[in-house]
Amino acid sequence: MKRRSFLGKTLIGSLATLIVPKALSASNKPNFSEVIKNEKGPISICTWNFVKANAAAGKALESDLDALSSAIKAAEVEELNDKNTTVGYGGAPDREGNVTLDACVMDHKGDCGSVVAVQNIVHVAALARDVMEKTPHVMLAAEGAESFAKSLGYKQTNLLTEESKESWLEWSKNSKYKPIINIENHDTIGVLCMDKKGNIAGACSTSGLSYKMKGRVGDSSIIGSGLYVDNEIGGAVATGMGEEIIKTVGSFLIVELMRQGYSPQDACDEAIQRIIRKQGEHVDFQVAYIALDKQGRVGSSSIHKGFTYMKYQNGENKNIEVNNFINS
Ligand code: SD4
Image (cartoon, rainbow, N blue to C red):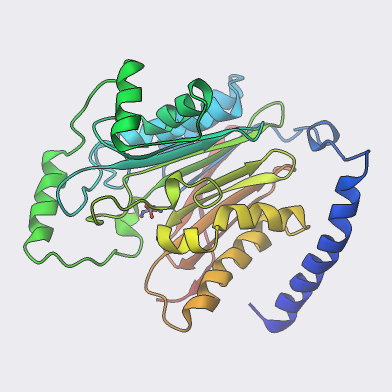
């Protein structure tokens, strides 16, 4: 980013920080759900080129489904897609051969649920919703999440497909642990939906980094990092190197920047640049964000070239290329 525009944004941010708390603490705190009607029709956006997944959410929204249920519908498409080696069934295993999934959801009321390192269950975004709605907790991990799923009748499935197993065995000949930028353009699914009422919710589902250490958890189950929604402002979701997303609490950061007056695009750019600034010249991993605000504006930004996202609105499901900051 050019210095002048950075300073401009910093100034806008500081002014907003000065102004916003006062305005929000007043008794006439604005209720955005009432002030802004969703006149543009429902919107679904999701990470990567997940055409079918995003269409599933878009059509669900058009047939009046709420934002959260629609976002989960999109996640389910990729969770079942055995060709996507970064989500659900067919996901790449950890270095010991276990496929472990992370997921989270957040709804328009600010409630959230998450599951971590889950084996043998395909639909972990739905399971995260069940944690949110049917337990007094926000997060369940590993065997605890699996027995909760069993108690609800979730089907047990071996998530390691023959193809994923072969790739893992091939990898284990050298066992070099180096995440690949834009892994074959199939990646974590993060979805944000705005329904006909103008409510925003989101879901995120992943098998995490291929051949990760056993027990490693990324950003996709961490509320604020992989996903954050505030229905008064908007939402954001992340994909890419989870460790870096967690360090900067990326999705929460984006929503808070939007609260201060940043557009979704500027907020995503700033979150990406915050990572780049901390890394110096050479950044050999990918992080990308998408964001949606209460007015239906969309933004997206990535470190490296190659990231795209889907946007469904008014019956049109488009794949959109994203600006990147580093040409690799
Ligand atoms: C993670 N952000 O576990 C996820 C994975 C991802 O490419 O996006 N993979 O860090």
